[in-house]
Length: 363
Ligand SMILES: O=CC(=O)O
Image 1: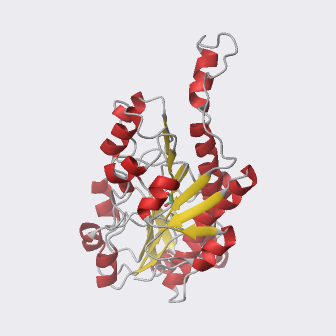
Image 2: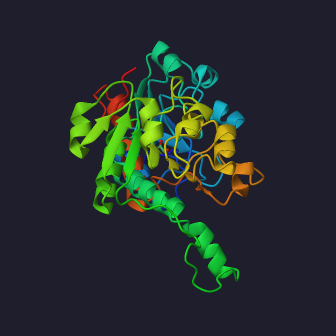
């Protein structure tokens, strides 16, 4: 359904009184309204995004849009390839692969892509750049939510909360035992951050009050300005592996970081250490992680992201008590998802106007 409620409302006030709620948009409208609507840029939205973004687009009067009206299943690729034909702009989420095939299907009108995500590994940046398509994304607004979830996942994993509730519920809770369900605590620990950015800093800020002794990080180069906020020391990848009691992955997935957490890294970690990943599943070699967890090379892992997503329930990682797996929910709070949707909508509108977006990827 193509919508452009405000443009529509203004036009209707001039022409006729039509109950907006009952409109089937464009179909059956007076010719003048249809003409006005059809001159607006066309936007396709690949998912039923949270209401704030839809409201911004509807009320802008700048665009008409069509959307895949479901949040439960992604738009089938075939339908997506059809729907993007001739659009001026696209709002997508991280389940849609935006590649040459899709951009060719969209055609030369497509000028703006706005993804409702901070990650952009689902976008073929080279193809977008080649076609001069501007790209908006949604960093910053999700930093708090992701950092909060990372801390929750870290504590859930290190203090074995999933195992503990399972035992309590299923009769495994006998007498109080001295070493039963013992885990590892943050007090006096060294926390390592792989890829120091806004999210890594926000995680460290939240962990500091747990009396962490030291923060260390590695990245392609030292990031002194960010590191000084959390008093973190720059170390090599090997030092990060060998010194961290908790290693949290915060880097983007790029060709350089794909499978960067592999046998080599796990073999250098302490067997009391906890590995946490809330970035992208692709940065981890899952077979190597399974080996490290099942052999006791490391103590536990908490993953919010996997390859593939969803991870099949038959996946070996699900058989391990020391592996906590979440279904990619790090930014899933109502306020954050609405903020992401609003930012995606505003990026798109600014992009279409030829103005700088609030958050735009440099291609
Ligand atoms: O993973 C979530 C995002 O990239 O926004």
